Image (cartoon, rainbow, N blue to C red; front, side):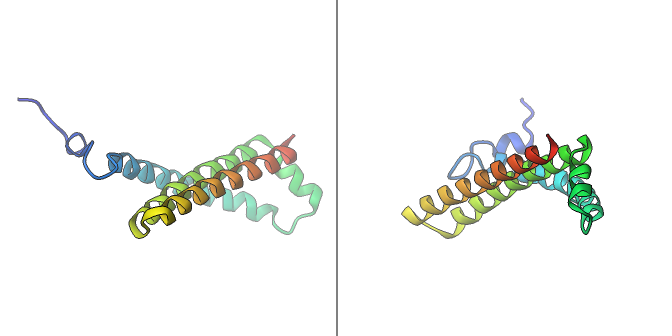
Amino acid sequence: MGFLTDRKRAVGRGASHTGTEHHWFMQVTSVGLAILIPTFIFYFGSALGSTHDEVLATFSRPFPAILTALVLVVGLQHFNKGAQMMIEDYLQGSARKAAIIFTICLSYTLMGTGLFALAKIAL
């Protein structure tokens, strides 16, 4: 008799066959964001109201730059998957496809723009 975990029994179930992966991705990114966001707010809040040169000096240091990049990437990936699940629940047909494509394009555009701006500041 083989031992099957609850996760192993759930793999391959559902309409898209990826529900378990979506769920775990959302759980992991939400825990990551729960740690990243307060730290990012601390650094961002300390730079808020500073002069342009002080802000550049803050975000050109390695830790704030890496933290900001992680918040951008993980946050927008989390947004992408969450919005996609919401769209799949409430829209059908070609509206669903168009909304998913728009959401994916929006999240990657924002991610690329944010990382480009961060690279311009940090380098």
